[in-house]
Length: 297
Image (cartoon, rainbow, N blue to C red; front, side, top):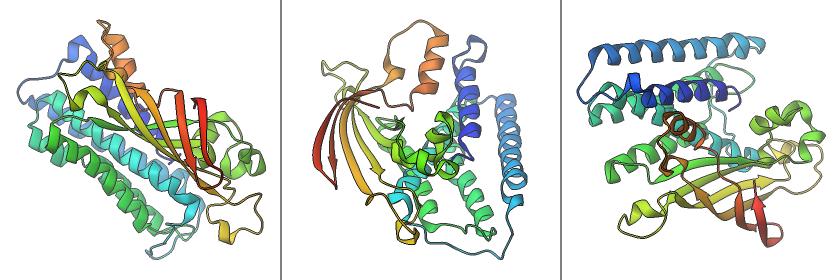
């Protein structure tokens, strides 16, 4: 997922600026100029990103005929969680930017919300022609699940009551294999699955809007894993310890529901809302059982 993060973040930032800027308020009816500009811009961004990936990443590895690769057991499925989240957010950006142009809800879901699945499937095709990797059915399923969460909530509730979030803390495992897990903090946030946690964060108030719960309060379920130096531990020559899974229960904040009159803050809150707010957390893992974190990152 490190190959895609900067592309996603840039697209997400541009989209949210457009939506919150007073000059670019959402159109109540279809604005053809905006829609055409969005189509052209997204085509250039996506095409440019794929071209860059091909030249800067895949060109360094030998090509092969198209083939599949079963990597479902790698990294305790943490990479699949990354695909799930990436597909969700690219689709969310695609949907919201079409909403800004005044496109109908139906077309937002058909052409916008599916942007993540379409883009990531194109990346899987590149993988399929690379001798080093191979197209992963598990990745494609994770991409589809992320898009499904996005579209399903829009069809069911016409809003996103459950969002996907991310948190990270540094681990000692990166020092063991810095080339694979990252040499510095930024690289590790993208590469070291041991320190990553992926969350489903549900807004309590949105399920009962007559309740007295704060509108910004969420409850979050998280998944992580540790003890991983190699993608496939069975293929490794040696390991420090047996990898294990972690499941978390914690509180969270929906930053987009914090009241503010500042358009700048609204934009900032919307862009960084994919980050899980540090909070106390209950951990249940497959190694030691149950533990409590007073403040979990």
